[in-house]
Image (tube, rainbow, N blue to C red; front, side, top):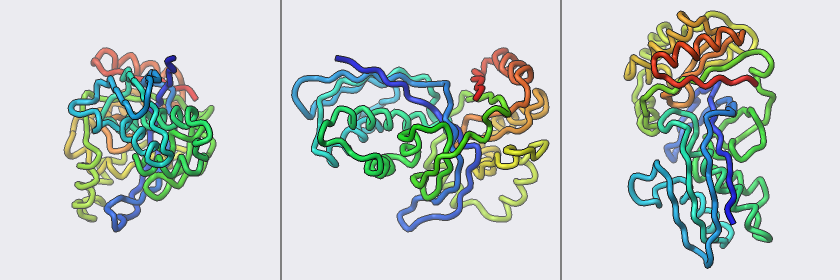
Amino acid sequence: MSTSCVSFAKINSYLKIVGTREDGYHELKTCFIRLSEPTDTIVFTVLEGSKNFKLNCPSVLGAEENNIIYKAWKRFGEETDFYPSLDISVIKNIPQGAGLGGGSGNAACALLYLNNLAGNKKLSLKKLLALGAKIGADVPFFLLNTQAALAEGIGEKLQKIANPLQNKYILILCPPNIAINTAEMFKKWDNFEKNAKQVLTKITVLDKNTNLGLKDIYNDFEHIVYPLYPKILELKKTLLEKYDANSASLSGTGAALFGVFDTLEKAQKAQQGFAQEKIQGYLQRF
């Protein structure tokens, strides 16, 4: 029997790096907002026996053991001694290297599926969240049944909140045809000097107002990403200056940008304009 799971993407409407831990992980303050599109679809099929794992996923370039879904299956088995044999197929629509948490969402889907299958070996939500944090910093958010959450630590300390954009703004997500390595961006942040950050802030923080909710749209990685990828900065300027977005920012470590609009007409105009430039614009009404 096969079971399908929808795997969601997210944006970080706010992301501030507040420190580095002894283990090398970075302490963050961030706001996650779940998106209704783009989404991946994961199909799980139970096989006979145990400890047999098959994965069909376009992001697996080498051994399937490198995929985060396999890591979720393995970690769950180590925690519970439950290793069901599975054949898993993933239909990928969430761009990779875009800062949208596509892989983390996939891992969360796998953990939730395994937990539902585990019977008396099922984990509590608290233990499942702790396990998710060991697999990826964004995984715990996708395990929660919430549209938005504030997060601290490496992203594992979560507090559910009302979506700050709910009933106020329309969002356009714009993933350019660029993939950015998250680990590389954190390394570059570590090597980035304070004075440079202060100078670049004047260039990259282009938002036109600080209405309720919009003043909290911010991402530290804009200071790193835009000098390396000028096309992404041009895309932000296009959102703000050509299409009159109220605010725009990078999600995660990039490369995806999102623009926030106060009218549907403006958002649709931006979506149509990006389509002409061969950029997929995902319109989100909360």
